[in-house]
Amino acid sequence: MTNSTTALFQQEGTEALPSSPALIGGTCKSCGAIFFPMQNYGCEECGSTELAPKTLTGRGTLIASALVHMPVGTEYKEPFVVGSIQTEDGAILRSLLDAPADAALTPGMTMVAKLTLETRPNRGEYDLRFTPALD
Ligand SMILES: [Zn+2]
Image (cartoon, rainbow, N blue to C red; front, side, top):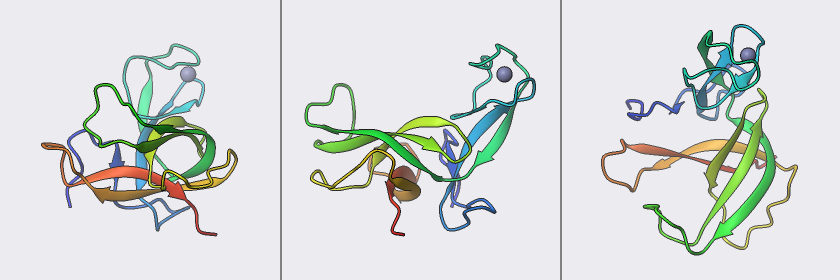
């Protein structure tokens, strides 16, 4: 497998969580802030442009979720579920969730990253989702 063209994630997990794909985020060399995705505009915490890529563990805590019935400007088929997740490394991100529309998603529950087959054209082979952890 090759990474997606946007390189937001990699199939290989981290040492802390080898069974789930890792996220490709970044860290600030000045203040240590961790963010996702990697960017070079500047640290959201201190403004430094001394940023470096950092592989983040694909596990975190669900902050909130929403069932989307009428999306605007997306290639995904509705309804779908989106969520905000704080990773164990401290980055906060939004992701599609691999969960049925009537799933009992509760803020604070543990979520893990997983790869699904990409359904959109020209986006590579896999797409990333977060799903409730089984344990
Ligand atoms: Zn910083």
